[in-house]
Amino acid sequence: MALTKVQAEGVNLADTFTFTGTVTGAGGMELLQTQTASSDVANITFTSTVLTSTYSTYFVTGKIIGSGNFNVFPSIDNGSNYNLSTASAGGGYYYNVSANNSGELTSTFRAGGSGVGIMIMADVQGGTASTQKGMAIFSGYVVNSTDYSASRSSSYFGVSNRSYASSDNYHTMPSNSGGTTFTNASAWNNLKFQWSSGDIIATSTISLYGVK
Image (cartoon, rainbow, N blue to C red; front, side, top):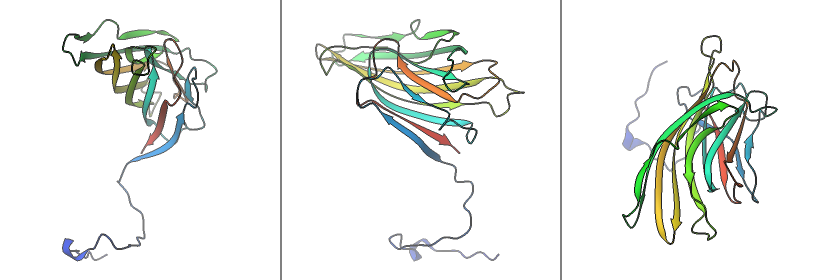
């Protein structure tokens, strides 16, 4: 097929165009599901309805309110069990606007064992005043093996930023974390997100995308 070169100045992007054929190589993500807590809930869970064999890689992002450590519990039997052996670790820092409280998250940002959640972020502070309730944003990738005969592990890796106020002394706490389950020999098809203590507060939201 002969190619026609179109000059940039010859195209008006305000016009309407009709394309035929197939576009390949564009990549991208497909939004599979967004869940928003209409009231305080124990967890937000994505099931095998959206976690299917169509994708081996997913992107998850959320805006959540609560306190404690925030974890994801993976399952290979759609939530009948969350008993996979996990290992997770992360690192981060915290700093406040008064410049009198800063530090590094180290020993508190490790977790592992049978049925232990993969830690997305640690040490989110809570409180009674609305300005003191821990608010956090996070995003990360969930990756299932493309061949469980060759690689029998599935993993999560992501970044987050937590914020809270103590007596109007505002803190920010950015961090990164990663976690893996080993020898599960099957794809994760259920992901349960929850705090280590207390509920996910109403208006929190998490979205799951399939990565092409």
